[in-house]
Amino acid sequence: MEKKYFDLHLHPLFKNFLSSYDGSIPPSIQTFEDLTQPVRMSNVFTSVVDELFIHILKSQSSIQQCKKGNVNYAVAAIVNLEFGFADSRGFFGTILKSKFSNPLDKIFFEKVRNGEISYYRLMLMELSLYKKLRDHQESTIAILSRNSNKKALENGLNIILSLEGSHNFSKLLIGNPLQIDYIEDRFTDLKKLKKISQDADHLWREMIVDSENGEEPTANYNQNPAVNLEKFYKSLSKENMDLLYLTLTHLTHINEQFLATHAFGMKMLKHPSFYPFGNGISSLGYDVIEKCYSMTNHKNEYRPVLIDVKHLGLKSRQDYYAFRKTLIQKEKKYEKIPIIASHIGVTGYTVNEWKNALKRNSCTVYNYEGTRAVSIEMEKKICGKWGSFVNNDFTFNPWSINLMDEDITEILNSNGIIGMSLDVRILGFQSEYGISLTSENEYLSTADFHTHFPQITVKNLPLNTMESMISENESWLIPTKEDRHPLSFCFNIIHIIQVGLLKTDIAEPWNQICLGSDFDGLIEPLKISPDISSLEELEANMIKWIPVAEKAYVNENGGTRILFGKSTAELKKIVRGIMYENGKNFIDRWLNNFAG
Image (cartoon, rainbow, N blue to C red; front, side, top):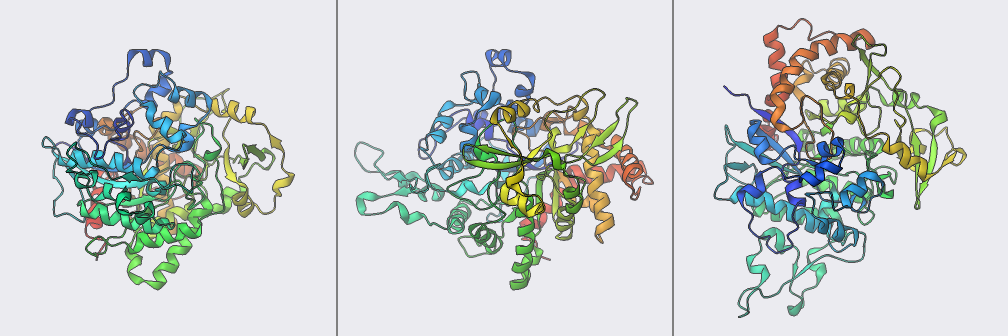
């Protein structure tokens, strides 16, 4: 029987969406082939762009690729083009905005850069494609929802929706905190018999304003984003759709709707919004979290939305765990709502170990167009040694976007799930004789830096120039062949298992690990798994390399060689769980509202 696969975080329609701007309401009908096929890349484009950028820009998880790879469950993260991406500098930013960046439609970049559209409208545009995919007469795809009686397909593709970044429900024009984005209700025919609102679904009606009859743009908008999220979810449920989780932040600071400090995670592009701002979760952020925990649909049926800790800064994650405990004290049923990390790697450190790993002499303050950030670099934790070459150390990536041990225990103890990213730069590094990366630093907001390192005065740190920042970040782009080795992936899994065994009462922590590839999210994937259709090869490699990773990890860091004594059949079962069963079981629990 053909093996099935699960992915907690990928973007099946994102590149199809960005390849053709369609501003009609509702969006015009696309063919099923347009929605499902990989985006086409011209020969002109591939001849002028480096191989790395082709890996990043070409389709990795289109619907056709998902079907080819026998993906049974896929959590599709809706994320839209942020201002920092559209207005970015640096080599890759130039490529994105140039005539060579086929197949991306430049209208998206122009409208975002010029503040002519809201993130909410962009989100609805992409969401509409999933709705078309579900409703298309040729479709054999299910979009799972607690607001529908439709059952999961046993052998076909089941899609579950999520939102990556709370900017998705901001109805303000991008970069303009005073201007609400709305659609004027108007007649669509010469006889003036039908208006836009009559063709629009419940989701698009949230943006339509009938000003001729005295309706104001503020009618469907509230200054508290939690209220806007609730309105959106109720409209979503009327369309028999649902949300598994909300990733509270993404890769940029959203000035018009600040909910939490994000973790730095983008070196390919240059813009002040990529650098973290603030000091943890804001009051509006707490309102959104509480609304997610108490969410109900349009029938007032309980439908909690999970919080994904990916992209939250370390201080924001700590704030969330503390706030979650206060919510549980007020409402016992919230205890059943698990924490998830959808597409991550690990630092290999506890929080205190991470702080002690700071290379103090490397700390530098950058001032970039009014944004101040502190550059930090950490000693990297060795995962283990493998290979016959001179420098054979594999190391974790110590950036704070990755999980600390305390994050792992919080997630495991909540009965949550951890999705493993396939991005080589998230997973870690491997040293190679004579070669060292010139840029292994990340950035913290000045407030977060003071929180984590109060003994170091920011004003006494040296200042650096933007020219040096751009130079060092460009050098970070090209991974070595060793960086793409499957051992890097396996070491991250082993660390989660070891933390679970040592610091929780969970006997089999591998049952709470799954794949969260982040395919089509601007990643450079493992060489053995360049796209979603190659998961069978990844699974075979995991069976081969996980025992090697465990032995090397325990030899370096101590711990229990719990997988060492397993039979081949038992090991295959554990890996099968990570690749499919664990994720499927988690979705089954979600469809049942985590009852019982």
